[in-house]
Image (tube, rainbow, N blue to C red; front, side, top):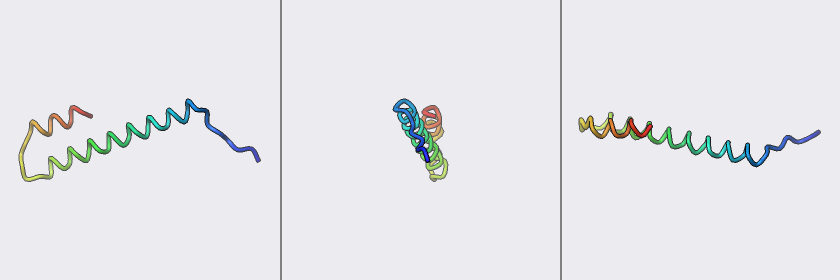
Length: 52
């Protein structure tokens, strides 16, 4: 059976996508944390959303 190997460019592409995914999830969690906090800081929420 032949093993499928990804080229270096595809491996790099997957790493970039994974890093961007992690960044987006982190930013969404930060936004949710701000929203769920007792403080009502619209500017902080806006700044966090702009980073997305």
